[in-house]
Length: 560
Image (cartoon, rainbow, N blue to C red; front, side, top):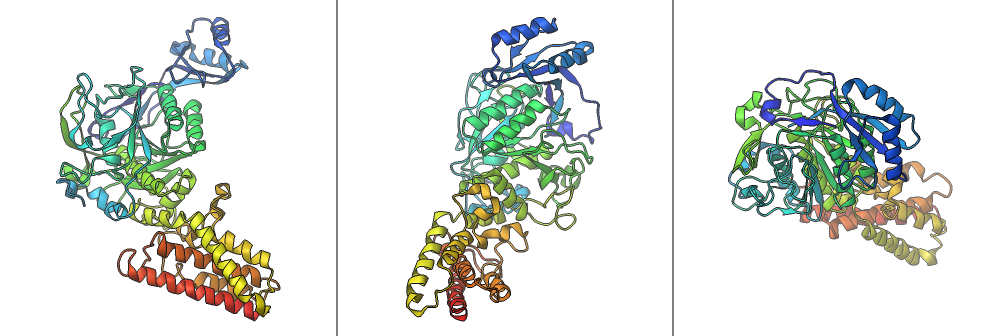
């Protein structure tokens, strides 16, 4: 499927107009147990087509492409769709891709302040997470006439692929992909140029667009599957448009099933329609705001929007209103390293991809939970709650990493809860005050500490005390939630219930365990408490943990 892009400046010279999707050729996805004989039989049956594997990564998926004249396309597709050997047959739609460190130009990166990146860097840097950039390639190496840009010198890369030329050298001859990769993981704090959101994340460059910005959806689908199979945990796709492709949609679903967070640009159509692939289930659709925190004049929006992020708006601030990163001179092979200011949902999306890498580097590995954290900690924009232009709000990486750190207590929370429950039971055993149902006490302690070993349970896999991230920014890391008040509310309501004492005691102890772990293992930053994860925060957490142990004792005595 042909996919064309232009530089952000060209794309945004005027708002995009709705256009009838165009197609070049077809994509045929055969059932996985088909063989070469099936392929030849199809060619003979249809007549006049030559099916060929899209790339070296297409064989397992049995993904073929073929050239078909426009006037014959509908007839050929109808025949193919009626054959049991064909899983999907569809047109090749044409789409578009959207365009505090010592780094001397960091002060011009206003978008990093908007998403609170400096605060996020106090907690995480993306280390250990691979981010696949599916784009025009990246200027990441010196190879033949290609040159690595200066401010990616310290950025780590993993093996990628060039689906345009079928080589391992995914070099950028356009500039778009290098700009996007820089927002995610530009070498930071190196005294050169600019910074990246997740500077220690590793980039997997996957080139699916050529020098003129053209590519195929077959290549994109192959790239998505390769990224998922080769260890990427985040995919950034600053591209989109055209008609719906079930081949690409299935690839997105596959990546999500493999634990990959997929961030996609909503589009630059300046209308209420989110482009594909951002509109697919499993994608996190990103709209764009300018320096004023208002929706950018070009940004698409709609019901699929999850988040907004800064993508620039030069109508507000001229060149300084765009997103500044290190890239190459547009469209030149061997072009020199330069710093350019772009605008577009293409530029907004890597802010979200970088923030996802920060969250995942802290141990939150379920993409659904990553999205939940990013959305629940977003800064308010538009109507309260969800809004079709801003989604859940404007990305706030600082809040997100703090919420992520709270959510990953795992074994520490469980051991602390069990330890408190055991000590509590032993201490009170002789007083007959534990005639509460020991099983209920231990079960509640474990459940309230978070069933980390059962991630399929969704919210129940998180510590109860960390569920404030699901209540929105006003509650995230709140001093009221990170206290004895929530369990106390349960006690006041449920204590009169017969045989509830054991469960309530366990709830108090599990909650106390989370506060203890938050104060010792991974100090939390409690909202309204002065300082960042400091002595006052720890004092608050320890004092409320002690109060909860006392409350557990009172409950047990009251219901003897």
